[in-house]
Image (cartoon, rainbow, N blue to C red; front, top):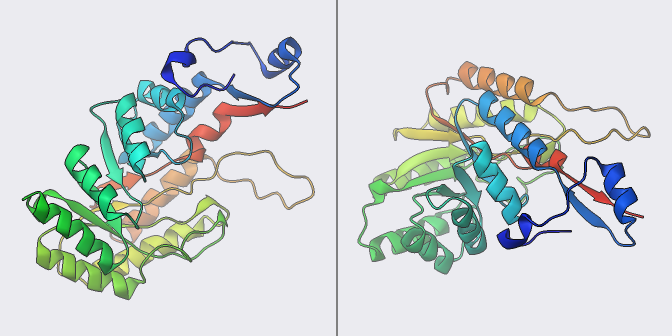
Length: 288
């Protein structure tokens, strides 16, 4: 039942409900179930609630049927992390914008992204990435001012999958990176990622405070702010654990916007990279 190509997507069997599918198939092996209308509804909720550019994180679920459905719901930008994701996103929407927001990239992947896929937005958290990107840009005989480099800031907080031990520059390092990037001529953005399935919503406020601190200590103009992902999906509650039900999507995004304004970042165009918050409810697995 799992579709891996667009040619098989339209031939998937359809059922009115999960119980109906289970009774009809009585599967001996797990069956991957997809609800496209749920995905469209959750995607449109996010697009309506977020005041900025929404770039779906393809790494969350890059199945062709998912990407096609997201495009039908109105998504026009994708957060991509590999050549395969470049191609998958463009197959779903040839005109889509690709944001290469993985902070550590192979030189060959950077070249492919910039030359073949026309990527003009990237993230980084180390000076080595600046050097790699600059080599490709000079090899293309392109102008650095045509590219926006988002400097990723490390954050601290509670999440099911915490990422700042692996990625992100300290605020002081971010200031130094911005100064170097500005001297080269690139446009500059600030970004962070609080982790996946956050458990402490104050993590966003702390990340915004760090972004404001960095912005206040550089002379370069900041073009945009990417608040990453981490938005929690509404999974079932484990009765054996404390009930830490996440806030509703709209309430969380409204709170982030308020904190963005409070920290003096309200003038910056915003970008978000939602993943599981819009795709999680659209899938389930039937097991015996």
